[in-house]
Image (cartoon, rainbow, N blue to C red; front, top):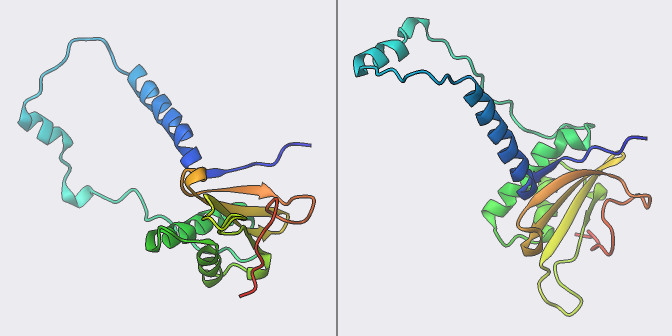
Length: 175
């Protein structure tokens, strides 16, 4: 049995991106030669880089719109989940559990498939981190935000043996 694929975004994705960028730079440098440097005049550089406007064609297309994939997997819906949660934080940097749940419901996710942890500790202090999830079949979209989490992050995980996405005490979503 192979382990499930877990895709992280946010804070934990940065080190991998740095490694990939470093490898790309190293590969690009391998093609450099050690010969003498050539000096180019500004007009030579301009004529070498300028292309006639009539032959220029766009090579890149606009990125596909991110949206909910009804009936899709958690992996397919992770970009939209992140977009909704990041927009929630942009509108309210102090967003709490209900803010995330309400935004996800407004974005089309099913409320009955969600879980959220409490916003306060057992002694009434603000929780240093909250988690929220959406179950999608046998996988879960899990988001976490707060100081202990280092900000917002998300991942796709398998459903727990309990049938839930989150471990521990969660808050009733009864609004």
